[in-house]
Amino acid sequence: MNIYQCPECGYQYDETKGDVHEGYKPGTGWFSLSEDVTCPGCSIRTRDEFIVVESSSTNNTAQA
Image (cartoon, rainbow, N blue to C red; front, side, top):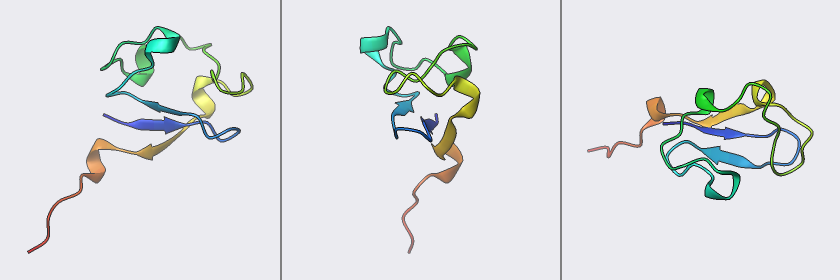
């Protein structure tokens, strides 16, 4: 699961947590959101302008 961040205000959408206040249940994928959704933090940026700030491919693993 990924975390997406608004480049305007810094709001983060974590797919694992969702955003219950906005009506997105935990586990709701980013691309399951409406294409025309705007940032709930600033209402300026749209879904396609958010950046991935943490990806499931960047798992923290313990080093020996």
